[in-house]
Image 1 (cartoon, chains in turn cyan, yellow):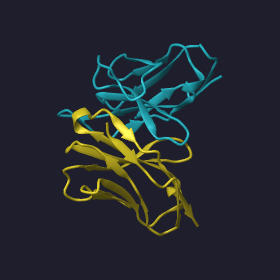
Image 2 (tube, rainbow over the protein chains, first blue to last red):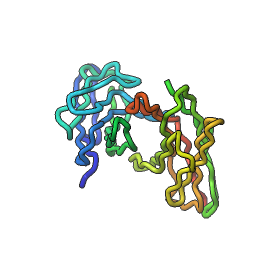
Image 3 (cartoon, chains in turn brown, yellow):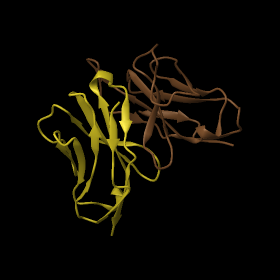
Image 4 (cartoon, each protein chain N blue to C red):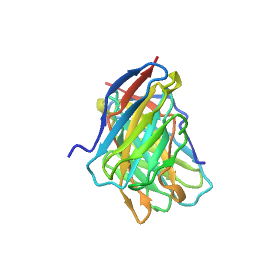
Length: 115
Length: 115
């Protein structure tokens, strides 16, 4: 039981390059999330997916796109990376029951640097 | 949108003593959930404890307890009998039940346990 896995662990991009961060969970959770964490700040929600086939914007969605490929996988794409997107990115998942979500389980994070 | 405030950027505690990490929140909703997460230097986010707004008793999980004062909108984390392994960043988070996938985090408190 791996929980939530993310790839890659580290990435360096040049401004304007694109990349996709991959996330998978094996806990049969309905909801999945992408966050970014910047120094001195807590996590900020980029996008979430309440169920397979649905995605919604979070607090800071600009510059990102997501795909909920199936129940297990939720990817985050940067189409044209900018230095302001240098951050640590976390994927998370949670169970839901009768519309309520519970604690979120996090992946190990991806440290992205855009030069 | 909800807001979480952690006013203590850093805290020190002697090993085996108890420590309280402060968290206040702002919401107009009556139904919401409060969470605490631990982030060690290795970077992963670890769920510690949950308190629902309608829970009459304060939540407890082992050495962690949540001092929930609804009228004051505070949800302080109490760690009893501190251990060196408790040294980490601690984040308070909240989600409102009407949009229970939108979790907001505080800026965090860095706890250092002294031997």
